[in-house]
Length: 102
Image (cartoon, rainbow, N blue to C red; front, side, top):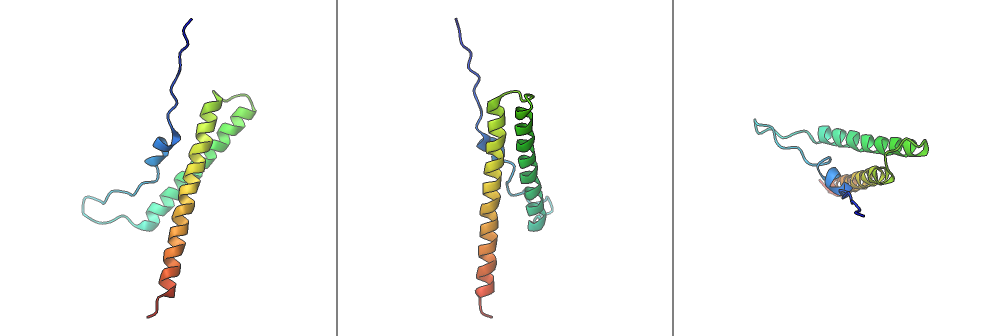
C-alpha cells in the first residue's frame, strides 16, 4: 500500500510577484507612483474576489479541494495586509510633510 503526497506551494511565493515595483522603462523614465498604486489596488481587489469565489464554490460543493480554498483566502489576506502597510507608510509620509515648516 503506497500513499502519494502532493506538495502544497506556499501562497507567499505566489503573491510576492504580484505587488512589486515596476522596472523602469527602456527610456529611463520612471513609472508613475499613482499608476503603480492603482494597479496594485486592482490586483488586491482581484485576489479578494478570487478568495470570495473560492469560498462560494466550497459552500456549494463545487470546490476542488479545501487546501486550494485556504490558499486563496491566505493569498487575499496577505495581499490586503501588505496594502494596509503601504497605506500606513503613505499616510505617515504625508503627515511628516505636512508638519514641515517652510
